[in-house]
Image 1: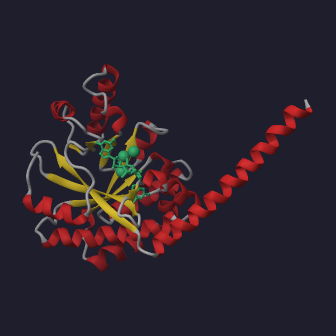
Image 2 (image 1 turned 180 degrees about the vertical axis):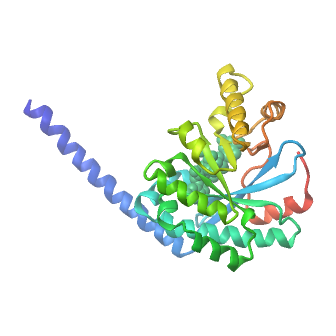
Image 3 (image 1 turned 45 degrees about the horizontal axis):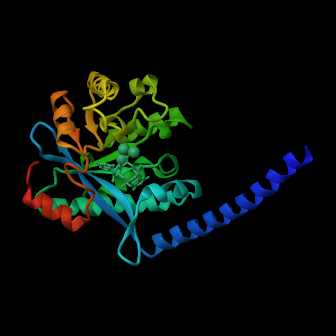
Length: 279
Ligand code: C2E
Ligand code: CA
Ligand code: CA
Ligand code: CA
């Protein structure tokens, strides 16, 4: 008995101490990366399905390494959220997105909106109408040009506060999207209550939409549900022409994915929007 109880405890604490110190080191690196300006935004176009035009671009965070390669946010966002670093980083993302929109205006693409991901931690700690209004003013950013992508986790901790804040932000004129819909603790109750503009179908459902009857049933249901609530539906992770055709045929409004365009640096985005080829 003693052996069974003691041994694992010793092993766990050693492993945990090691993990904790490497996490601390990683948080230190992330803070430095932020201070040194090693974060960048890449942009992925979101196309309207009825005419192929670009409705918005999603800003996606990248950590640029010394060798020019990039680290994906999936690898560091969770740690940024736990450590609270996501608050200053998220504030920088909003500023940068607003600066980029000014460049879209310069090339005559001011009607293309910028969609920004906002973590639950950042939403609670740092989002307020005053700050958003100042952001709009500083950059002469028209409110409807900013879309905030929120996940269901925003609503878990303080649903009433979140709802009030969402209403206030939306009164300021910006658009709200519910991201990764269907993958978390989806609840019809909050869909009914929340002021939303877009529902994004997670790529987990889009991936098998042409081959798997269940995925197709879920996508059909999400499109009908969203439309019933007056929301525009955006499908994520479209990698094949057949998926795009299925979505178009079933009334999905907009789509993004590698088939339409990978996330790209600002210069590539500007070149692409200026050229304006329609897939
Ligand atoms: P997300 O918001 O669901 O973003 C979509 C992810 O899918 C992006 O991954 C994008 O590069 C990827 N993607 C787009 N099209 C395709 C496709 O056709 N196939 C596949 N397999 N993947 C596709 P990425 O850029 O690695 O971002 C991962 C997650 O990190 C995002 O998921 C978002 O939750 C988070 N994130 C990214 N930027 C930010 C940010 O500025 N702030 C916050 N809080 N979170 C961010
Ligand atoms: Ca997103
Ligand atoms: Ca998503
Ligand atoms: Ca996702």
